[in-house]
Image 1 (tube, rainbow, N blue to C red):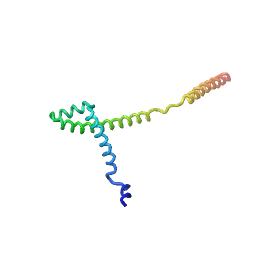
Image 2: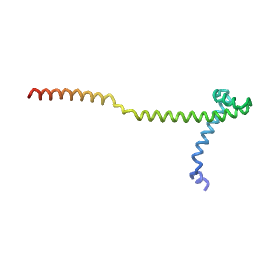
Image 3: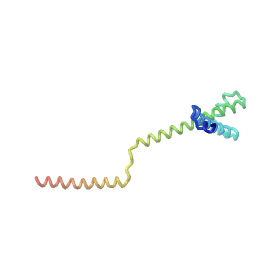
Image 4: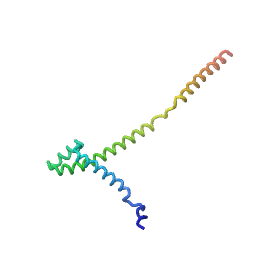
Length: 124
């Protein structure tokens, strides 16, 4: 049945997400171009490579801006991964109550140690 075929895995399934992402990038780039709120660095590159041809400038802008948007996303993913790795490398924090009881235990242990040493020395 046709409906069952929709759920069959194909080698093209993973590319579907990529294609839908690219569509969103192209939509964003076109919206920027139509509104005049372009990425100036990307637009300058497109202008430099278009020999003054407006249609070619727009076409190159779309192409380069889509790649730029994809790069921005990739950089964000890498930054997030680096943050997570850094945070995982930090020693675990103890809560203040645990620290407080550890300090009290050290003080009591220190006082107890003083009495033991004092008792041993006095017996000599």
